Image (cartoon, rainbow, N blue to C red; front, side, top):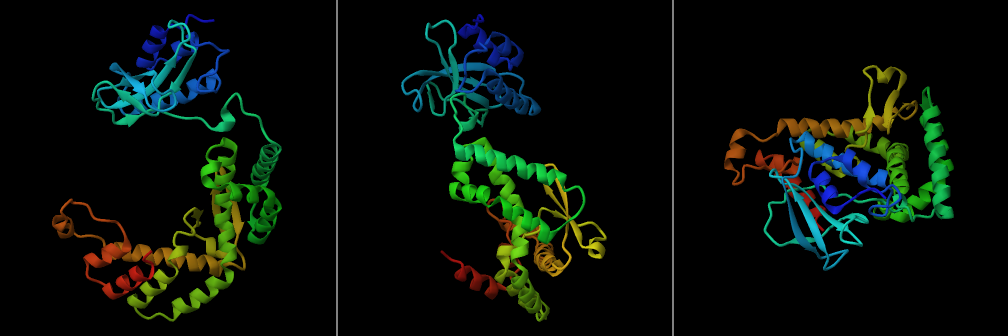
Length: 338
């Protein structure tokens, strides 16, 4: 075992010294139930974030009592003058050497401290050394790897219908992730990754599902003749606002009807031939919103009249500030009131 005394480790943490921690912490011991390398990788990232803000070490160490995972045990707060801090429970079986280091989520300090920016962190269940993959977990991992591999192989453009047909092959993965929900997914690194990926592809899927709705909505839009009527149209279809936020539209996209969609580090070129009107629907929603937000943006006198100097950034609030379309704003506020 390395000479990992409590004092040495405390000093290394205080000085943001990952190199020394790597040298003195035991390779055969898990910290926060993960490998030493993973623990130090996460800690190094937190120190790096603090350094970007000019904090290069902790100025002092303060003690307290844990009120959560290790109730009644003594914990340590490492605190900088700028307010960066990390609360740790440093475990020792012989009061000399360190057997574990854990983030303390509820440390009650003996003194009032100016703790502002928490450098604490946590790990997913499937990052822990005790984790054992279930059959379901293994299947999701296989399907996710296949999905990512397929996406990387889409080197040239892919038609929207072909992309949807391909995505339908992963119904098992989509069903499991949907049943788990976001909160349980975020407990696992793998499920969190799958959740993010399926959400991104669902954005494309959503456009395809709007074919009939978009056609009817565009007919209604072209029947509007005033800003008030267009505002009502927008509010009726507001749920689809920002539907193309992750799409990139090349300058000449209307010629070949190809748009770019970025998933992780993969750029998909999707051919929307036959569905260009669906894109038009989403684009009209976004453009009209941007137009009104610019037209009715707060003026200097609005900020002067605000008690806090802050103005809520919303279309409804901007219209109220300019006393425009107040009846429409009130009507839709009542309509969507819980």
